[in-house]
Image (cartoon, rainbow, N blue to C red):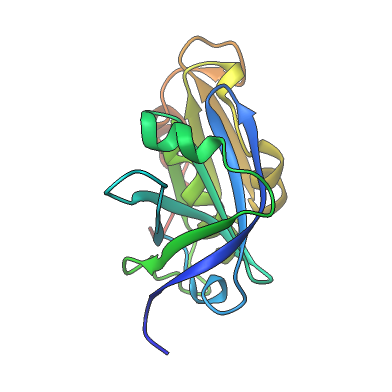
Length: 183
């Protein structure tokens, strides 16, 4: 087997989880289990020349989870794909992250940069997770992060949910209080 391949994945679900943000789950028992945290997939979109690169949000039991935001015509077409369809995907791509047992990690991300952190958080031992969003309507994956992290801090630009401010503020606070992180 190659390090990556192009194969058909069965579309299990493709649901909107926030304004313009979709959670796509596709099944392929051969390629999905090869995905590591920090990798991505190239999704072929019918009638488009270039594939859409989407970060791996999670991989479990042969199911690859891709959370993406509709930003143009290609991702709009993706958002209209239906359960049961066959999706042509090139995966897993990229080197991924090396997570070492016994190390303490702090994971920080904002907006659509948050989904790839979920699979990473699941590989870490009780990480500190700090996420940031423009407002409460765009907060995603809160329950999943709560289940796999030591502490989850949610920041919003407008203060409509969590704490008002930017993601670097709680990190600075944690470091100043004496908390240490390996990475």
